[in-house]
Length: 198
Image (cartoon, rainbow, N blue to C red; front, top):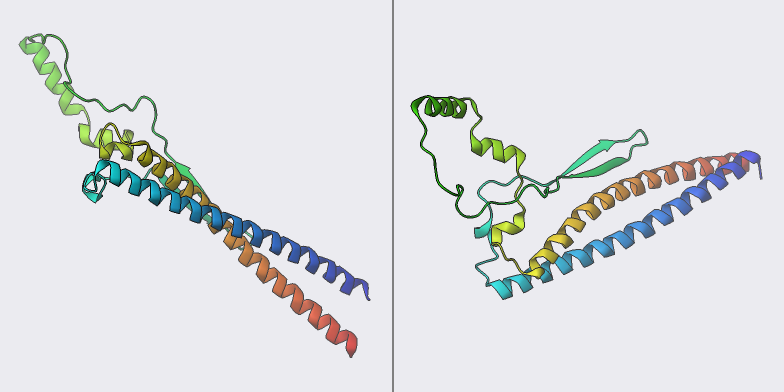
């Protein structure tokens, strides 16, 4: 066996082992994502049973929704696609106020204080747009203050599904790239064996 043939055979073996590892990893992640989706829907159905089917439905969704997770993609030099998730977590300072906004006695303002307050309000950005950009409400609060544990478990399961789906997409892209490299190496080896026969 020539040194070139031995080299290409070793590269082919290494690529095949990498391909098999990637396929095994992909299969494990797919099983895990299926289990999480099943668990999420089961928890959701339990919550609907305990709260009532009208309490956990699309009617409770907020009128304006903003995603808490974004997925970014970029193509690598190797031809593979990379997927990354960016999550905006809800901070502890973002507490929903319930009840009266003002407490205690209100003080009357004289005309100059009143005019100064009006000027402040006119220069400020409207509250609806300000809170829309800075505050992100936890979707669980759409279904009430005291939500059952099952609904929280469903949310956790579906959050993990988002992370896993990005990992699966990236892994699937690398599997396709490795398969392409395998095919190229196999064609090279086939050409070398045909040339050696002649």
